[in-house]
Length: 281
Length: 330
Image 1 (tube, one colour):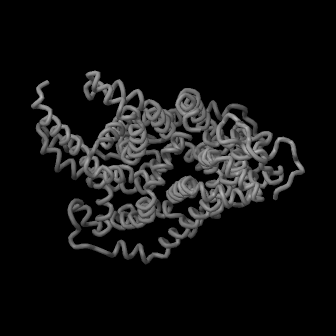
Image 2: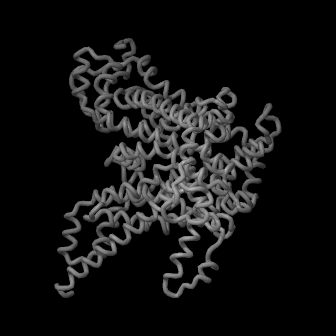
Image 3: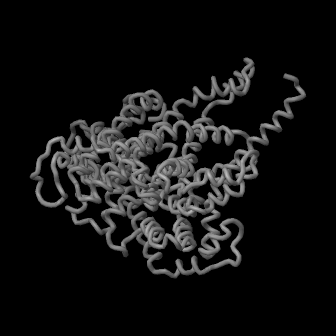
């Protein structure tokens, strides 16, 4: 291998690398840009000129969606379910993980293993019996019929993430807290929670994204249209107004704005969440 | 809540390492009441909404039952036998397996190649990473709705093929027209179209996982290989790839298990059609069990889906997790 060819080779391989990266970038962006711009066209324009900038720009699809009470009700329903799920999963998972991490008692490992078994239960397989349970509890057609199962199915992974985190906090800190007269609850609240903020925000962000995007459970549980979440709304618009492409696209684009904002601000948490989640789960 | 009336073995703080080390100072105490208060909220929800339904489905899977009234019509394993013999259910399992195999043979190498690319010094690397991972944050519903519009007959995808195709050497516009078909409407290609969309959404996840794995490999090892005369390919093949093994196995597991649980995307785009060509186990369950009010049969299908997931997960635990993770991370 002649020395002189090395830079040329390097330039070539650099070019290939950039070409591949840009091609994939285009593959990701084109559908998204198509959707955003499509919302600014009429359906007729989309059929005739799906590529290029809209001419003229049409605002009625986006404005119409933003003025639609049904859209805002779905935003509210989705937000309520996502936040309620998160606000329940954080205390429930962290209290249990705290007890399982910091105290020694009979059956501790058995309880922990019992929770981790839940990692093997996919929501998909449990849907049908879960629906029956919710019916017996009178939770069908109620947002709580989504929230409580989501919390329950989120607990295993959250506990699996939190327990090692709690364990890694030095025993000396606990000794000091006990000497200062701290009981378990105060130790949990004043020492453990502040120290575990990274793990807790990771769980919170993953829970919000998962809940915001959830489809199967809401599809079966939320029967009344005024209880629908955004994914149900998007699916409905897409089925009902399938031929009005522009309206479908505008509605869809607006429904993902909150998720994209969250991604922009919490990318680090999402990435670290899926990475640890994958390794542990 | 600092009580001491239950002195058994309750109340000593657990040391951070798995092997118990001697405790310094006064051991913290928590009564069983306190422990119950800590654990029971989670435990109650978990048992009520995860464990109980699954146990219930075991029970009613041996009955013919429409979901109403008492379980009286005991049919033994007939529901399972019916599922095994149903061409629709077999097709659904096959479709999931096809998605799994395609994921391993196409999506995984694709994600790995991009992870390797983004592991180099590259202008705009952070932006590429953010963008490649972005589809993972979108819901499958949104992904499905947008791609359904793109893949429509005479939609964006067809237009792009018509424009770009003839520019390639040896491709005429006639052969492009012959190649174009209803991507989601043709039973011969619909499943592969869906696999393409799934790849669009999920390759970023695997790229991120593999990238994290690559970044965990010390540069010294590659330098040592280079000093020993290894070329870039040899260094990748014999140093990087073996060390990336644990991450690759995790990706493999997630891909396989994910393939067997696909629901949202299929439901939004094809609902399992055309003529059952994209039916997955989950859409089959909703369609044939839930949709037709056959809860006993649906219970049996649930159990089968669960059993397949369980076997896959246990294999993973047995061969992957234990070897790679134990001691290192937990």
